[in-house]
Image (cartoon, rainbow, N blue to C red; front, top):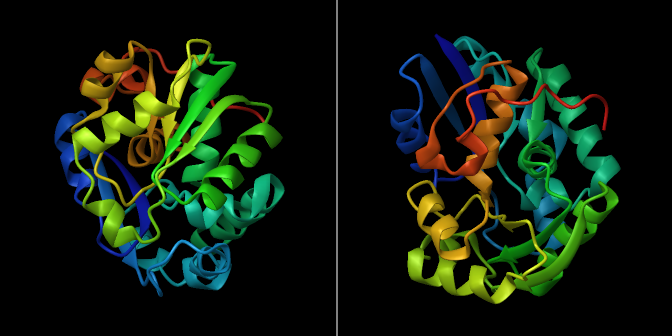
Length: 247
C-alpha cells in the first residue's frame, strides 16, 4: 500500500481526491487533511496568509499518523503567490515540519509539464486576472513558455467550486492556442477529476488540472508509478519519468 497526503484548504473540491483514489490502483491511498482556509477570497495577501509555513505545519500530524509517504500542499494560489523561489522555500519548510518529502500544487504543475515534455503551454485559470497573471509569471520563472493566459474572474473558492464542465470547456477553449502543447487549469477549488478526459478530447491535447497534478506530484515524491488514463495523458503512460533533479 502506498499512502500519500494532502493539505487542502477548506472543503470546496476536496471530494476530487476520493474520486481519484477510486480511479487509481487499489493499493494507493489518498489522505486529505483539510486546513482552515481563512477568508474566502483570491487577493494575493490572503493567499499568502493561507499558505504561511506555520499554518501548513499545523496540519501535518494527521498525515504522519495515517502513514503518508509524501505531502503536497493542495493550493495552487497559496503557493504560486510566493513566486518560484518562495514556493520552493514553502515546500522545504513543509518537508521539515512533516519529516517527509513535500511539494505544492504550483510546483506540481511545473513537474507535470516537464513530464509531458511540453515546451509551450496555455493557462486557463478561473482566478482573477491578477492571480492568473502571477501564475503565468511563475511558470515563466520555471522556464515554461506561456503562449496565452486567460482568467475567469472568480474571486472566491466557493464560486469556483460551482463551476461545471461547460464553464471549464468555455474557459479552456478561450485560452487555447495552436502552438500550446498543453492547457493548464490551476485552481484546486474547481472539480476536475471527472472532466480531464472530456477536456482533452475537446482540445486534442493534454490538459493539466490542479487536483490531478497534486496527486501526480505526491505519487512522484513517493516514487510510486501508476497508470490511470481516466485521469488524462499525464497518467496514461505506464512508465513515469524519474523525479526532476533540483529546481
